Length: 144
Ligand SMILES: CC(C)(COP(=O)(O)OP(=O)(O)OC[C@H]1O[C@@H](n2cnc3c(N)ncnc32)[C@H](O)[C@@H]1OP(=O)(O)O)[C@@H](O)C(=O)NCCC(=O)NCCS
Image 1 (cartoon, helix red, strand yellow):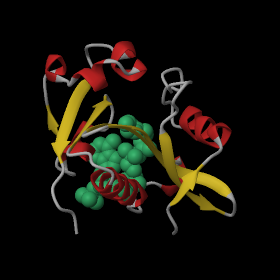
Image 2 (cartoon, rainbow, N blue to C red):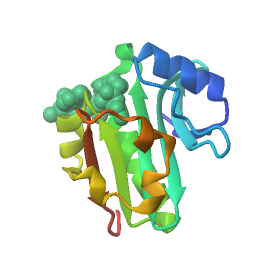
Image 3 (cartoon, rainbow, N blue to C red):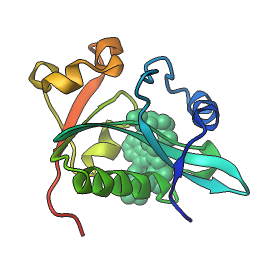
Image 4 (cartoon, rainbow, N blue to C red):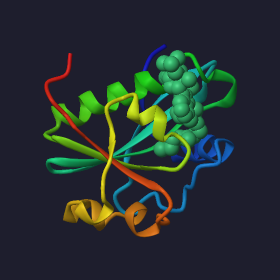
């Protein structure tokens, strides 16, 4: 399966709605970069990445229900991390309510949201997230 840049925000929002993930907090002025996987032309998995210098926000990771458990989510996380690292980011942050164990398995740790760097605090996602959601981060090192 090829991971490719996804330029159609419409395709992304359709997938996110199917996966019950919010689309309200996708920045309108500087939309995040999305990567995804298509099957038969249909977007079946996607992840968003907002890069702000040496930090980034991993967001909107979604795999269509019928395609879960085939490591597509893991492949997209690894791809986004490599992309972020190659573009100067050394730490990625994310919010999650439903997939904390999944992200733990990928090296993310729960952290205090008041320790978020300024650039992350300014994102619509940071402003919009309720306090019950976990805020997680991962330091990126040289990736294979
Ligand atoms: C979370 C999600 C992206 C995982 O995608 P996926 O392609 O099914 O994941 P993978 O096949 O790469 O799973 C790898 C492992 O994570 C586990 N896993 C998957 N989703 C999980 C979850 N929500 N919680 C805990 N573990 C999870 C799998 O059981 C698998 O475990 P294993 O390595 O022991 O076999 C997918 O379940 C999804 O789209 N969920 C709804 C949207 C969501 O919650 N997104 C995250 C918000 S940012």
